[in-house]
Image 1: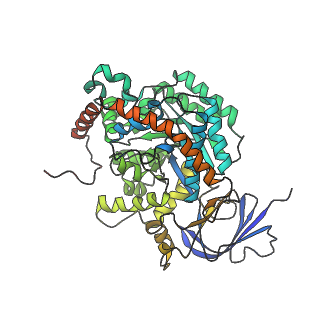
Image 2 (image 1 turned 60 degrees about the horizontal axis):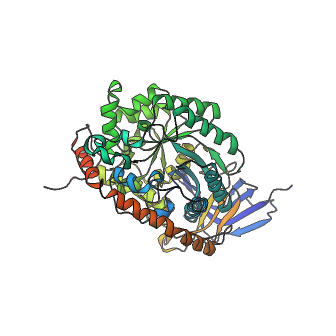
Image 3 (image 1 turned 120 degrees about the vertical axis):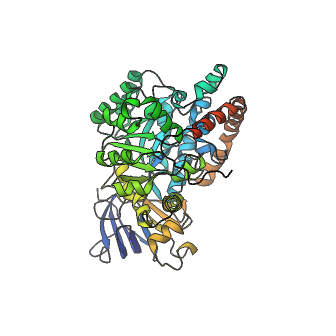
Length: 504
């Protein structure tokens, strides 16, 4: 069967490492075959899209994302991370319906695509576990057409065990309500077998879906469990995704519980073989310089998430230090209820500007660093290096075309800087994944968006009812959560990741 040949004509092709190039993009099947002024020579395309001078950029790769709270966007004001756990994550809620699971996965994926994100690493919590809910998520991804690296978020230690002061400050009568980020699905061996079973059942069944492993955080996983994860990653040849040092409480927990490793979670992970080039760590706000250098030496990737780190009052990641040490840096968009937008343009802009505010002197990251992190860096972080993240022959045909007449891009003084500092996602006109146009003129080619919006609204009363119950239940514990957070802020752990401190 002859592959469909797609020709994108008259585009300005932008890459963070080379000057912008005016030319064409020739796609055969799912792969880019030629790029440049002569790309159309001798070709017989079955389909032609005239970009009309539009700006072609590699599809963004969100190296850290969670689909499980998409329907809660806009529900919360800024909260400390540990307080946000108590209202946003699945263990707080009754089991959801299959329809809701599918709708939230599809809505998040649709938003990503319309903003030029063609690949997501979904670290999805399915709690309580239901294999049919996994099937529903996969159906949603397939229907909307996005590329996904899926990892089920799991742990074998209750979430509250890793939060300083919770068990000391909060009355025992309220401990049952302390969900934190995760609840175990079983013993270490049972969870590993569950994950192994899902890999066996689903891998290779969906062309645009690959799989990884998702231990929630090292402090919510026993050493035995993490060692089994390391072994399974080798056995199944897949990447591992986890959260590290997202908030100060995580760093304080490390100082308290990893004293044999100089209070360093990174040294502990290194000792059990987890810190390696298969690993991607999200956030990493509270790293020390020694830890950054160890991460760089191990070839481990870091996915920074500046928007959610601000909303959860977690601080500013040491992005410049990561880049200068040679860490593989990626970018993520994180949860919809703690970033409220799957928008890589926001992430790229803050990637640069937060460093400008926290350092105050000249130096990286520049706009090109941000675009590289959102594309090639994130592709490496999710295990798709050399496949996505670049518009070049041999890469998957995952890219977007931006409207050159959008006000953010007029006048076009510097394409990379304006993509990072000026554009918001409004200019995204067409999005191609695997050689297929999945967004045309700003709308999905695969689903009826109006009908889907009605379906989402039909599902919301049940979720809003349960959210109200969660908020009501948390009123009793909220003062103690605030007290624990204040105690954490008062602890000296040898570094500070907040840009400013209150006056007085």
